[in-house]
Length: 396
Image 1 (cartoon, rainbow, N blue to C red):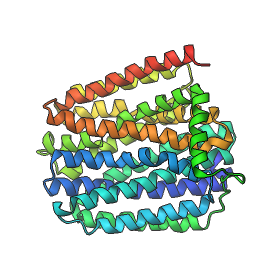
Image 2: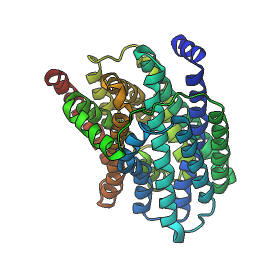
Image 3: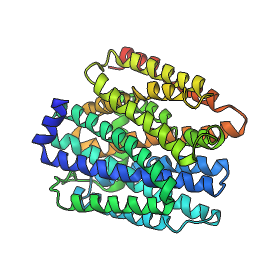
């Protein structure tokens, strides 16, 4: 814990960026919960829930080739301010969605909001290697994952209660206010630009990024490995559990809030407990235990209260997998290609999230039980564990 505090104390830019992250992520969960609650209240079909979950991730996958080149080309701070402003505007328009007649507008707003959010994230993660050395970079990634989990835990829990008592429109207003605070904090921050002074044309930069990854196969495999964490895109699964399996216990908003908050608390604890132990050698076992934890959650889903044991176990290892595989990728990437590699990595990661979200909805409509679908996700993590073993053995 002391090493995280020391890094934040000594690096003003990282400290301010971390505060902005915490506020923004916390606010984002209000809209996130609000959208799913609104869709369920409007009696939206299963495909709409899956589409909303999929569109949370799809924009990053589609925009990554262009965003990576743009990140490496234009002024960093101005770009981050522009992206934050777009997010505020899209949340404002969410307040006017009141019926399924506007479903396609809602999905469009989700696409724009998440697209700008993912590009902001790529920009920030490309900036960190310029601010920090390798040891500090690992700590910064862990701080980021803990901030995400903390904001996820409290954001989901608070948003669940907030929406239950004040409604979805009020949740969108709260998100917009919090993002406005983030915009103000970002406005006063001195950020070095990562734009190359001798940048090529965007098309040439996109192509050179793909060539760079092709010529460095280890980077390509690390991108695939990091994408495995996208299998934890449970949003559609949790919404379906709340709507079809647990709605007799609590309101849908509260069920989703408690499940997501429990999962996020375990993610924060996992990062603290596992940070000192996760290495290239132990990563295999982390993948295996993560898979077993998800399978356990699937087995215990028949009981609302017992299922929290499985949720807690499978959450313990998620942030460690995310932060460590991300750090490995950053270590292997040349500075001139940070923006593009991070963007392409995000493209594959979000592609996995999108595939997972749509697959959950499709498999459920085909008649598979939610517990069986959950168990299948766990098996994939075990497969990725052996994939990492192969990468260590074959790729140098």
